[in-house]
Image (cartoon, rainbow, N blue to C red; front, side, top):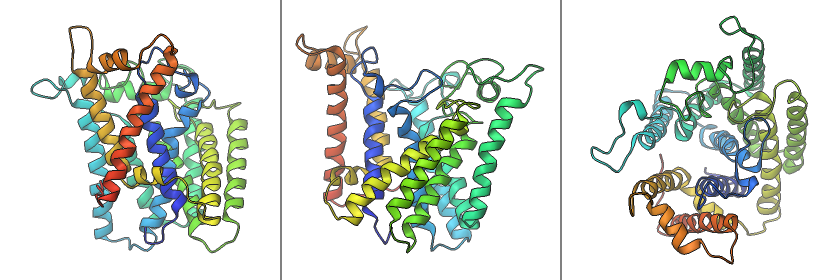
Length: 362
């Protein structure tokens, strides 16, 4: 990004920090409710984190590709980056610390966070290169409405479709047919195949915000807030017919999360880019190596859970029980403290990498 918009870097870094925090509690048995995903319908602050990242991917695409030609060189760059992201995600899904260091094929999860980022980045970047905002808006609306019609009105094996977690839920049905045992749960995956379609719309909303940020209009923060409020209201209205649901990445979920992303980014933009208030540098460092930091945190967490101190205790559990579990602290606070320690480590690592000008671009 030749013309830096500080708020975009801060927002990206903050999102990565939150992704690590919600993924690494001391124990999943004791977690504050806002740091957990909604059980099915509805949303919590944690449910905002991943769509926020896809949103900022779209925003960053505007800065990175608005002066690029739609030629073979650009296509190759987009494709290679997408494949790297997908490959890293598949590696995390397959890795184990035991020789030969990969799980049995039947136990490998194919979908995942990095895989979805790779797919969404690929299609969003190509769409941005070939369409103006009107075309992109039409595609966005088509994705959201089409997904709603598919999920809610097309019969499935002669049965009426449902938005509940059930065999006659289209997203669950397709994932089970395509991925079989290679899923997060036996009957569904939150990063599944069909739900990837509306997740592209999440990134396209980020593209629209990026277009606002690179424009010469005044009071950009006001427009972003207005966009955000409209999307939040529309999303909650749509919730009455198509429930807000992260696992299914419903169209109402896309609108609500994109709306909140605009509101929060507008606030950060106003403070950092308009008023010039210096804050959030700590998050900017994490944003500069966002994928690298996220991948490393996920990789190390898998290792900590896999290494056994004894037959029943993992290294992760031993550290939590030994260092963080005390009678004068509640179990939930101890669990949060562990997560904050993990986050602090990776933020410090990102800071050191930034100071040494080490930038790992996937």
